[in-house]
Image (cartoon, rainbow, N blue to C red):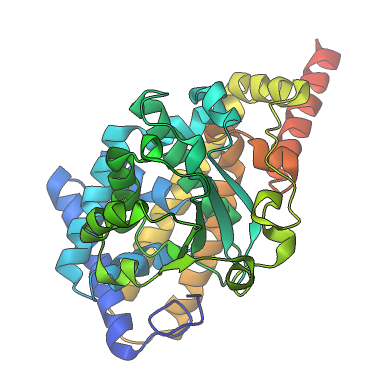
Length: 371
C-alpha cells in the first residue's frame, strides 16, 4: 500500500478526514489532561516528547493514519494503541537505542547476517532479508536480539520513500531446522508489527519452507491479525520470488544477483564525527529548542485545523508548519541518531551528518582564530 491508496494520506474520504481530526483532538486532550498541562508544555511531557520522536521526519498524519487503519477507523481504539506505543517506546528505551545505534548491538550477532536490508522490491518497498538458519535460539541473549530487531524497524523507516509506506520481509527458510525455531522472538517480531509499528508490513515472503515448518506455522498464524496473515505468501522457487522482487535484489544464495551481506563497521571518520556531535553542546541545545518550537507551532495549528471545517488558510499554515517541523527534526538528527552500515553502504543518505560536522569544524576554527 502507498500514500495514494484509499484511506492513506492522498486519498481520504470526508469521513476518514473527520476521523483523523477527531484522533488529533483526542491525542492532544488525552496528553494535556493526563499531565494537567497546557498546549505550550505538551512537548516537555513524557508522552508529548515521545510522540514527536515517533513522528521523526515523517508526516505526522501518515503516522496517525496507520493507527486508524489498523483499528478500522475506531478513534478510541487507535488512541489506545498510540498511547500504548508511546508507553512502550519510553519504557523500552527506543530513543536511547536509536541514539547509540549499532554500538548497542552484539557485533558478533550482526556478523551472522541473520537480518539485513538488501534493496527494494518491485513496488518500491524496502526489503528486510531474514536468514532463519543463522538465527539459533539461545546463541545470543534475547535482549540483544530484540534490540537488533527494533533497530532494524527504525532503520526501515529511514529507507521508506514517499509514496511507499511499508516494507517487505523475506524469511529465507533454506536449511531450516528446529534449532532455528524461536517462538518467543517470532512472537516479539509480530507483536511489534501489529501493535507498535502497525501498517508497516507490505509483504512477508516465506521462501523454501520445509515440511517440518508446517507445525510451527500452525502455531504462529494464530497470533496474527487476519490483515497481517493475508500479507504472508509461501514461495517455493525463484520464478515465484521474481514476481515480487527483481533478481538484482535477490541474494545469490537464493539464486539472485545480490552479493551476500558484508557488514561495514564504523569508519574512523564516523567516530570523529560522532565525537564532534557529542561535544557540540550549544548546537545540540539549539537544535532541540528549534524542534520544540516547531513541534508546538505544528500542534497549535493542527488543533485549530481539527476543530474547524475546511479552511484554506489553516491548511496552508499547517502545510508550512509540517515542513518547518521536518526541517527542525533534520537538524536534530546528528545529535539523536548515529550513522549505520546502511549509510556507509549508500542505502541511506542523510547529508545532514556531514553538513553539521562541517559547521562544527568552521565554528571551532573561528574560535581558534579569535583566541
